Amino acid sequence: MTSSPHTILAAVDFSTGAHSALRQAASMAIRQKARLHVLHVIDSDAVSSLADQRGEPFDSASRTAVEGARKALDQWLARVPLPQGHEVTLVVGHPLHEILQHAKHLHADLLVAGITGAGDHPAGAGSVSAKLARKAAANVLLVRAGHDAPFAKIVACLDFSTHSAHVAEAARDFAFADGKLVDFLHVWADPGALLGVMAPFGEPGLSMPAGAMPTREEQVARLQHQLHQEVRDSATGIPTQESLHEDRNVGRGIADHAQAAGADLIVIGARGRSNLAYLLLGSTAERVLTRLPCSVLVVRSRED
Image 1 (spheres, one colour):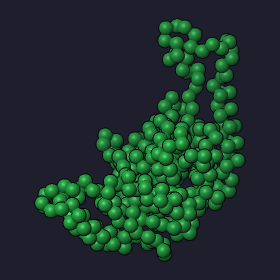
Image 2 (cartoon, one colour; image 1 turned 45 degrees about the vertical axis):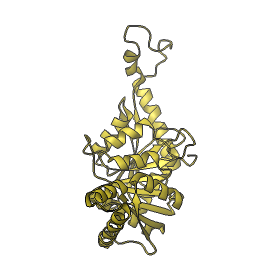
Image 3 (cartoon, helix red, strand yellow; image 1 turned 45 degrees about the horizontal axis):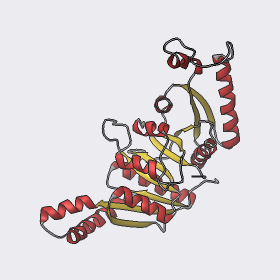
Image 4 (cartoon, helix red, strand yellow; image 1 turned 60 degrees about the vertical axis):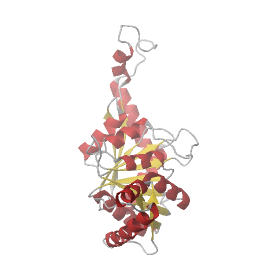
């Protein structure tokens, strides 16, 4: 498996989502002989509030918090089979910053965190998890609470960009390890259906000669051929199926297809648009995160 991680960082708190994330990270590290680092961050703002309530210095409250968290963390980690040689780090700081800095320092190939839902999107990613997916330079696996077992149904999203091959390869690696099927998905919209939107006052929406627009059947056949070719080139050796889903909103189409298919993992690409250390996801991946029906693997391009 050419893109298997060498170093996995599992960022954990004491939530059920984090417990599932740690199980996935530990299982992957054992299977793929990768190094596993477990990180727990005590929020410095919470420690500061505790210090104010008790009328004690921040350093004193910090030591108390670390001692209590260390005992709780040791008991919590004892419930998960961890690989030999794993390392555990406990720090006080701002969670997002500390996780990103540790991932950078460790040169982590994969960052794993839990999600339990947040805000107005009960099935969506929590704020810290979503920010990790947006800003981490490594691939990011966000694990839903209860997803302790190997992922049984994987949906990999291909947009036919240069990054699609990386997405297909990452999905193939997950499936290859467990002998699972991957549903390769392309979400599309009929260009002809958009003409009315482009020309609301009767002007021509697109300057193309009459008859130049391909028929729906021709479009579907072309997309099926393109999807089949991409899967054939990038996902050999695993059971696959190929799906086209029509929706003007790509993120909504991905989430709806994954939910209908009973997927427990979505694999999606994140295309960086600059050389900044903290890369932003494209709008499609953002929409998937806020509508998240299952766990998700966000794949960075090697160029990023």
